[in-house]
Length: 448
Image (tube, rainbow, N blue to C red; front, side, top):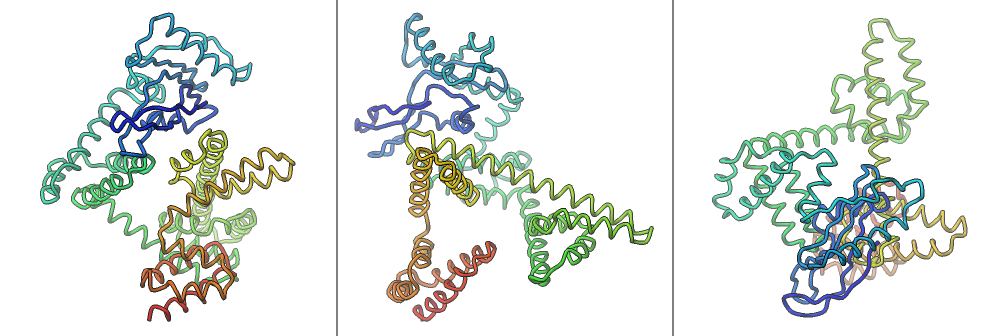
């Protein structure tokens, strides 16, 4: 429910084409809620001078799951009461025309009017269970982040320590979300500054130091478990995984790492064999074995639920891109979420559209695919883009290009090849792995 409109930059007076949304229906577009609460809705940056511009426009917000209907008419555009009612009526007509008949309920005929945009946001958050006290705490976090951001580097450690009790998981998460929002607003330089300050805050604060140590220990555990899995080799049996699980049974972190790294191994047949093993074990060992089996069941369910949520979010994002009037802008806004899962969901939808003969949907999905691939390529590091190009070329052409251009990138090219090699190995891309191994040798020789 968006439209394009032409506005004038208040700074340089150049024309800007902006995407404006006046009706937010979180059922049909769940991402719209995040855009609105994150301040990204009806906001554009002037391509000429870089000035951020917020477009004042009436907004109708609808969340059917909470029977919440809010309307906001900005004070910047004063309208007579009759004209306001007409505008609200048009927004209501736009919303209800998209709703199924069974969704038409009494609350839809009585929208609550918000006097300010912030008041509308507060009402939405309160409907989500966010209390005014929680909102005030969040605002305090943002103010403290601003304080840290404006503090000279040589004084930051002292200021952080003065506010040590306020630095917790929510505070660091707020900094991460702030950086993410800046990336989405095409301000990567500011995002980098926030993340750099966040790293120093974590180093200087008690909570951050504890968190960093826990992360270090967890990473070490994951590496050790990965090494043991590699030692099992391709011929590992379910019995091998049972033995490994029993060995890790008293260490919840190792057991979690095991399931996370080797989820496919814990299938129905695995648990059948495990149950048989428990039944034939000595009586004094059964309680422990049953406890390990129960932990594995819970961990596999958790991994599956998390994966299902990731796939659902990717599907919702795909729907948003398909329905967007400006695919390029929508792709740019959601770059951080265009990962392997999203591409898998997109590819599956293209195949399904082709299978069912839905030519129109197939063409639209392919258009989205092309725009996403182009955007991902444009945002790649130069070395990674070059490696990607090499892997898509015939081998003789790739080796020639490598010999001619390797020196332009230097030793970092080999380091990036090693990183790509790990990714391809985890995916089982044997053919590409062989090609990359050959190209890596050529790169080393060329750089010598």
